[in-house]
Length: 99
Image (cartoon, rainbow, N blue to C red; front, top):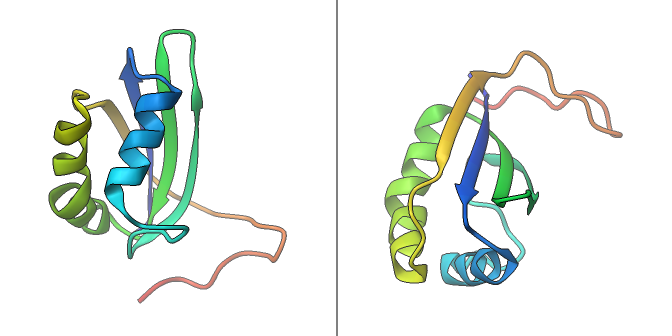
């Protein structure tokens, strides 16, 4: 089941976000299982909204990439909220379910 995630980093800024993205070394690609990624500043840090094929896909990303990259850049783990995705709509229509 697809999940949506809200990740919030208090004290993170654009420079740290860009350093984190650079350290992840994904280029212009998404990690396998990631469907969308939206990021931007808040009054006191940085916010990311992601949609993943499954919680397991995000767990692989955390273990294989994000945990190490966060430590290298010197940022703490974000606060995370997760909820099941009921529907996704895009300009191209509703995506096919992932198997």
